[in-house]
Image 1 (cartoon, helix red, strand yellow):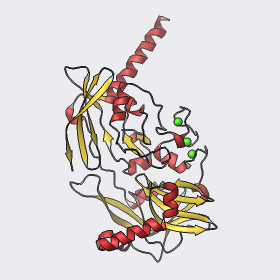
Image 2: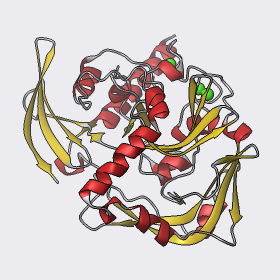
Image 3: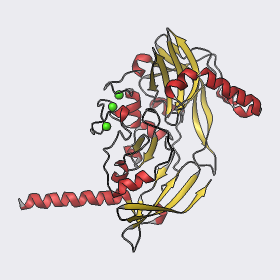
Length: 360
Ligand SMILES: [Ca+2]
Ligand SMILES: [Ca+2]
Ligand SMILES: [Ca+2]
């Protein structure tokens, strides 16, 4: 009995120690991992790692990346022309916007046997969008925009003979010095047809509304409709990976999430903020917008998120004040800013104060 007790207390101590490590930091310099460049892959590496459901066909006649990407750039147009194009796009994709709101950039609309299709793109990647008899579904393609460029101009329909198919190139990201997170692309091999069988794309094994490719790519459980077992289905769960738990530090993290005002994210099933964190308190948030978490160690990350820059912002670990046990420091960053906060826990409430930061 004594031995069991000892074992339990050892387990408890080692558990709290690891939370301590995962959520708190001593050294000011290490508080932010900062921007980490994603690996660049060669054509061979991309092909070696291509998803098994994806077929890549070499085309004889094709539109090059250079031609497609330069012609599509809006700066080629006058302000007036650009506005006209933007308005035409709003009009063309009205039916998709009415179902999916502004969760995607839309392109390549197609009507086939009374079913509407379009290509969607958001911060997570590419999606095939479908509207059938008023019901709207989005299927994640799981092909990283770090490796796969889809031509803006497609000569053929994107759905044909039971396949999703688009022309494009294999690319690599060129980093702009001094502009973290800003990507430009360069083609490594043009003239590819990317092909996925619709029936593979649409597999949703646990029937929770997210296709298997999405769940496997982003780290959800494709075989359970409730990944974290909290009774809320993945599709409706604002924090589908981890059970929410109200405590002092999960509340602190909640307060630091981006503020989107009155926008109701409950119905926006395809919009996620992605954070890289191993901190249990951060995982326990009960957020107002959908969140996903990526493990901090690259070796624990899935292939898709390791390759693809899906993170829009970050919230750091917590630093304790050396003298005041109720005072802490924490830092947030987005694409174009960083904020430094001091956080004081007083009478059961956090008082946050911005103490510094930068705007890029
Ligand atoms: Ca599913
Ligand atoms: Ca699931
Ligand atoms: Ca759940």
